[in-house]
Length: 246
Image 1 (tube, rainbow, N blue to C red):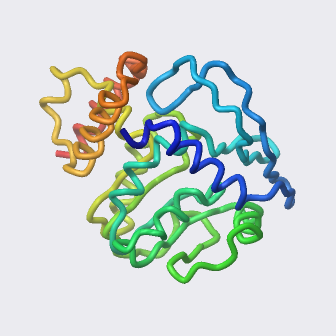
Image 2: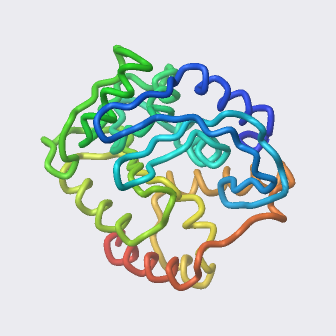
């Protein structure tokens, strides 16, 4: 049932709530929100379910970045489980994903690209150094070329836009990447119409992630709460991917 098991999600949020302290550095702030919502917006679903717990948030001067919430834990579960070898990550956030990846024996090295120095300093205040994790401050789009076994782009603020296509092209030109993933890939594919997606080459890792996410929704009983993404948006992005994936 993972990642939709409530106890699993609660324990992960509690674990990181204990590790992450409220703090302000420069224009960025970590604060805690006690969640009282009666309706939970999880990954790919909404349902009447309460998570009465503190959740760490990250906010910039003009931008809300993320929260370690059910959606965050559920949406990154498959991404984390598939990470292997030398991993590249674009976007540090609160550090949840890279910390979880670093726990895996299959992961040997993680290079994280983060442009905001405040975010890097907030992360280091909470987690310090990890021999597996190297953080590069700077523009990920202008980084030096590397070879990666696994690459994850996590800069989309829980939204799907056609930027996932242009980023796919750019990062695969910049680096040699075996398995490329991005936040929300499962929701994107599961929202595609069969008659459209059948004509598009889909990377194996994306298919594997989507199959497992669907199975988890089904096994947990959450499938009845599943919400598709906007049909036109998904169709437009799929057609753009069709061109670059062929």
